Image 1 (cartoon, rainbow, N blue to C red):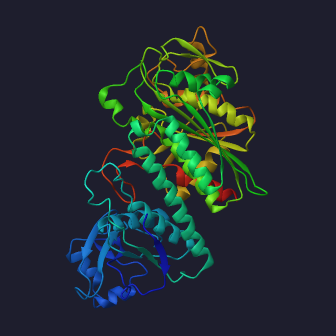
Image 2 (cartoon, one colour):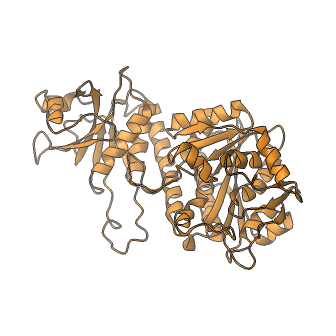
Image 3 (cartoon, rainbow, N blue to C red):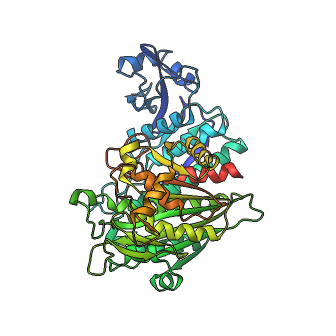
Amino acid sequence: MSTITLSKSDAAGVRTDAVVIGVVKVGGGVALPAGTESLNAAYGGKLAEVLSGLGATGKAGEATLVPGPKPGKSANLIAVGLGEAPDGALKTEDLRTAAGTGVRAAKTTQSVAFALPTPDADCIRAIAEGALLGRYSFTAYKSSSEGASEVPGALTVLTDLARNKEAKAALERAEVTADAVHQVRDWVNTPPSDLNPADFAAQALKLGKEYGVKVEVLDEKALAKGGYGGILGVGQGSNNPPRLIRISYTPKKPVTHLAFVGKGITFDSGGLSLKTASGMVSMKADMAGAAAVIGATVAIARLGLPVQVTTYAAMAENMPSGSAARPSDVLTMYGGKTVEVLNTDAEGRLVLGDALVRASEDQPDLIVDVATLTGACVVALGTKVAGAFANTDAARDRVVDAAIAAGEAMWPLPIPAEMLDKLKSHSKVADLANITGEPWGGALAAAAFLGDFVADGIDWVHLDVAGPAFNEGGASGYTPGGGTGYAVRTLVELAASAS
């Protein structure tokens, strides 16, 4: 990952390869926000006119390259559209996106300085996060050494607050959070042949030792002894046995106790309810929820936030074979509840059910699960917005507010009471079925299923991240193609806001 620093250097004289500035869309032209005064002076007070002449419109996501005021002797400019700011105020997400767009417009080896508005520490954190996240690339499987051996150029946020205590803390949080997101992206992008449940557990153990958090792993024998029928049932068709990872971070005098639960299907073929060939292509990303909760927990520990976190990552590979679970098989879940499996491709809720019962035993103040759970949620909300479900409005709003503050798109969805009734009535032999048998409301039914495994009296929020966890399109802003690391920033913000 690139290094990033704060500097009070003047934007017109800073020693760097490129300077990123913002451009605001105003009426039929463009305007320059605070922080560009010296650069504007270097262009004779006509920088806005120069940008307009080069076709800049200020549209969000647009990047215009401008030669430096002294070609060959001064840094080139990368002018990034910030969109309209009718009230004169820019949102932190505008700055985060602009920084990501700007750094992607530069060469990886170039050093880049950011002369974007920094009225407070939150804006500094947003710019630093956008810059670091926008510079991400995944080259582990490239046969050419080109790109893989390049040393990324340094990044600098130009701000009058460079020596401010809050600004330095904001930069540290941006660095730690971005590092966690990069790790999650790497995991999600890794081919499933190189990241099965045992591999994932080994990496979690390594991170635990590195950052001083306790990591416990239940293998297939321990899962069988403990009665984790959901995780075992999903993983029984694979040569790679399942795992349940428990990570605990307990600071002195924690202000609250959060539990995170993540779906970790390292590859989802659909089992005997086989997916289509095209439907399997991105299923290496079906462990993105587990990756996110692990990454966020480590980041929270590194930041030393005064919040106790207990995390469960339920890992399995869902494969078809002679030993795979069959439609109509009945699984006895952890805690004793029975589930008739009528669709083996509705497997995520089975591994999460076990983990939610186990997490409830720790009696946390709030459980948040993260899962690439349903295609139905993508149909409802698209590929960039996660669905938020909960057993209380207050718990749901708390997590959605954290997502908004972190810059991750999320929308609240309901859990109608009749959905659980349908799951219970759809099985004639078990406590409930894993599907309703109806073609609509799939995301709502999945949430109802999960909620039945949360103990009474514990606040719980379910995040269906099937859309935003994996970007099958091109890069934009600070979001790359492939794994996005979605939910890490929300969970870190949730912990930070509680402290």
